[in-house]
Length: 201
Image 1 (cartoon, rainbow, N blue to C red):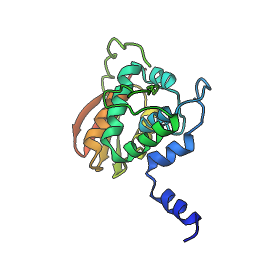
Image 2 (cartoon, one colour; image 1 turned 120 degrees about the horizontal axis):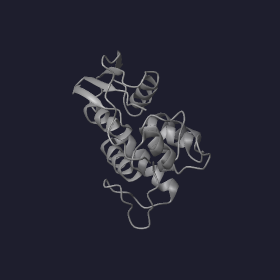
Image 3 (cartoon, rainbow, N blue to C red; image 1 turned 60 degrees about the horizontal axis):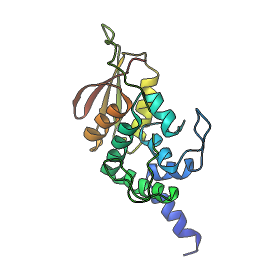
Image 4 (cartoon, rainbow, N blue to C red; image 1 turned 90 degrees about the vertical axis):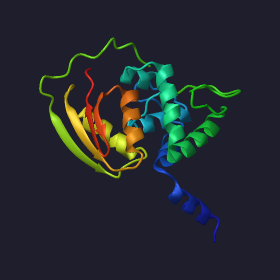
């Protein structure tokens, strides 16, 4: 074996989150232009923003979420998925920070900058007859599902609904978690079918 072979083999075995983390590390927020941490980059991937990564503040503001609550939900989310957990540990190493527990709090010596929002005060009522789109996501998972879902929801008008057919075994946890983090209401969830309403802007 040459010296290059282990690296090639290692890269081939990397999960999508780890590959995306390495691609985005050292980048800048597409909104404010400030550099983001490795954990912020991974948070953007988990929420489906790998094509337009944002710092924690801009992403939280974009999702209209409280930064602390969103951080806690993201940390819990990545700790439930092995593919994201491996990438999260690498992000902590890259950031030079201590580990963050599932509560979203940093361990000794760690800081927890990750992903802001104002209180919504409730959503406006949905359209009387929401438009419904059906998307068969098959077994997409580990970042690819939420990335595609975010793009499909962005193409719909506020209040419109999408029914996602997702057979990935982690979908029963991942889709509701993603909906809570992004603010898109999960209307119904009976695996493998999930109906999601695009939030009002």
